Length: 208
Image 1: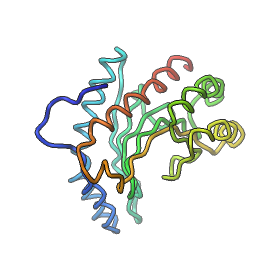
Image 2 (image 1 turned 90 degrees about the vertical axis):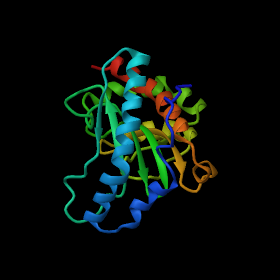
Image 3 (image 1 turned 90 degrees about the horizontal axis):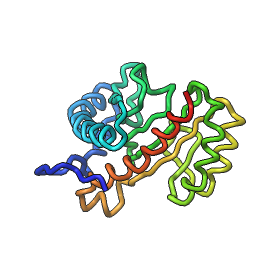
């Protein structure tokens, strides 16, 4: 377990999801900036410290700013961590964020990732671990809907066949989960993020 440094109050709580009640673009962006981004900064710094301590490697963090949005409010928001300072979207990366009804922690290989075909055998090599550890899986990082771990072979096959598809592995904590309603789950999110981080480091070591 990766113990969170002592603090007086929890970072995340059930009120985080209230940002999605504002249906305007400027309103939601302001709520994200005011209410969530400081939490992402804090937990992101903790995650970066843990990752560099664990792996003795360099990591980079980016918090979504949604600057390209001009009309509709963002349906989700997140922080991303990867190992390439030039950007995370075309490289293996981890995310921690929120949809309107759940927190998510994911490891993703997006459709336009560099050296895409080089990851195909790695996905198959890690198949047993992903299924045994019961991660959720998906072919679409823009959707909150994920499939059970046992569907992983089909998700990989789809990723290999359909070039516009993504490969997503992750964990979700729903807003109506008793854990969220009770509070005090920062440590759970950190533990899940760190558990998922082994895929980030392994895939980056295997594929240039």
